Amino acid sequence: MKRLDQLTAFLRFPSISAQNVHASDVSDCADWLVDKLSSMGFAARKYATPLHPVVVAEGPKVPGRPTVLIYGHYDVQPVDPLDEWKSDPFEPEIRGERLYARGVSDDKGEIMAHILGVEELMAQEGGTLPLNVKFIFEGEEEVGSVNLSAFLQEHRDELACDVVVVSDTGMVAQNLPTLSYGLRGVTGVEIVVHGPEADLHSGIFGGAVSNPATVLCHLIDSCHDADGRVAVEGFYDGVAALENWERNMWGNVQGMSNADIARLVGVETLMPETGYTGTECIYARPTLEINGLGSGYQGEGSKTIIPSSAFAKITCRTVPGQDGARIQDLLEAHFRRLTPPSVKLEFRRQHVSTPYLCDPKSSFSRAAQEALEESFGVKPVLVREGGSIGSITEFKDILGVDSLLIGLCLPDARIHSPNENMPVELFNKGVEMSKCLLRRLAQVQLS
Image 1 (cartoon, rainbow, N blue to C red):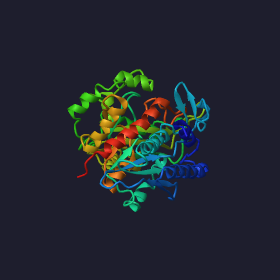
Image 2: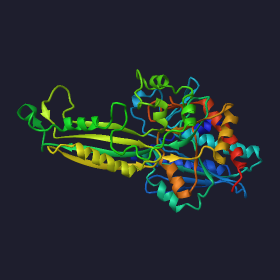
Image 3: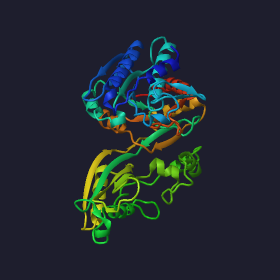
């Protein structure tokens, strides 16, 4: 079967992990993966979890050679708003040399590129592989990988490996291969300012009773100073300065100038932290962002009230040297110190994931860079990824190995949005890259 035919068959499963109505579709997609991997001669199995299945497969054993574990997630985001899609999100369609479908860039296209890379390399090598290959594909990444840690603990021996390969990160540009050696962590909180027992008439009580929405605005305004730095005491403790080689490399990355980023996201100009470029802020600086807030009347026209409460949802992207639980402590102390006695502050702690950083000069990392250069024809760019992937720190903590983050997702792939896409050429390049990568990793000498 042709490459694209196999990818489109995979993409047709509406494996939306966040919606219970699609639980059977997620399970059916896992079954499809098991059948595909089994047909290649791999020992493949679907494991049940309290939510969605995990697929694990192991190829023929090659004694004395490295073992690579290839990770991906076969679950996808919801498709809403559906009316903004130009084609059915689960009926893949090629338009203008790009393939459009939900999950094609996050993460089914990358999964299939690696599966086909292994399959084609086996065919070229007479049914064998130059190293040991295992796969692990989960169906819960888009809902926080809630069962992955326990699964890795339980199956640690089965999943033992020397390095993990993950293609769930981004590329700077289609013809510029990208290796990520770091990820930011994420720390979430929610604050609620409680005032009067119920909404009050703003004419009768205005000026005498503290308005929770006004207090919330003051609290939010206190989070940053005029230079764009987070103004929470102790927030930057432990944050290391960027290396000169990092700043030099990122300053020359194609398509990532401040003006380029502004055009990409549709704003007039960027407002990065003083002393840093937009790229440096995205890749490697800690942040505090307001993700949502609300209070009072939101309907048509006017309703003159003092709202009884106001809330804000906040996440901080953390970098190596920061601890998410400590950041939550600092935020709570900051907000409580500034909250006037006329209102009450409720502070809710949410999820925490750990930042990740590995050595881009390690033997496995160098092998990956050589494979990227061989398959794309240019030297790869080394970056840190601005987002967070919880599974990466789980692999490090539980399996004791680093991950090679080899992106195949473009900045304009529209992941998590309508009209998600991937260039067909890039998918095919990904298959070739996977074959090059396995050959290069097989040559790494184990200590």
